Image (cartoon, rainbow, N blue to C red; front, side, top):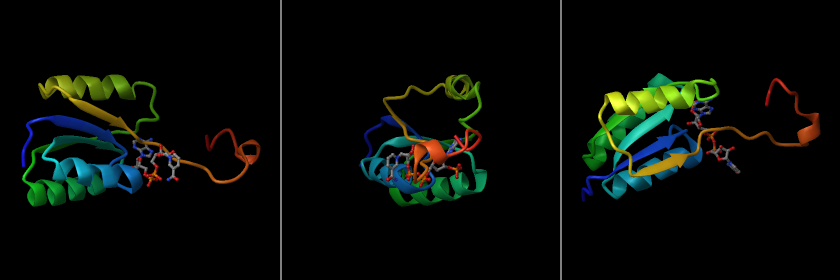
Length: 106
Ligand SMILES: NC(=O)c1ccc[n+]([C@@H]2O[C@H](COP(=O)([O-])OP(=O)(O)OC[C@H]3O[C@@H](n4cnc5c(N)ncnc54)[C@H](OP(=O)(O)O)[C@@H]3O)[C@@H](O)[C@H]2O)c1
């Protein structure tokens, strides 16, 4: 089932983002994936594109960088794509007491 819509999912290579990527692919969304690790992005892209016959592109970039949002925006414009759904999920969580976590880690 194809719906000709495009979803951009950040943090798509593991956990919640990966689970959502599968759900969107099952619904026939074409996908733009964003995460840091290029190898994991390639693997996900090949796997889901073949299994669900969707189109996909990935953008390997560290979203912690101050210019990251602008970079991703420009790449999407260069690809001439229009996004229907944004899942802005990338990030990490630290277990334990907030006050005991170092500033550098955050
Ligand atoms: N799991 C929970 O119980 C829970 C609870 C509350 C909130 N959350 C939030 O939900 C989101 C997903 O959690 P999760 O447990 O599914 O995380 P996860 O399994 O650790 O996956 C994180 C994803 O984000 C990507 N990522 C991390 N830092 C990045 C960066 N600087 N730039 C680009 N991509 C980056 C990782 O890709 P790379 O490997 O390429 O970096 C990976 O695809 C996080 O924002 C987390 O804080 C989770």
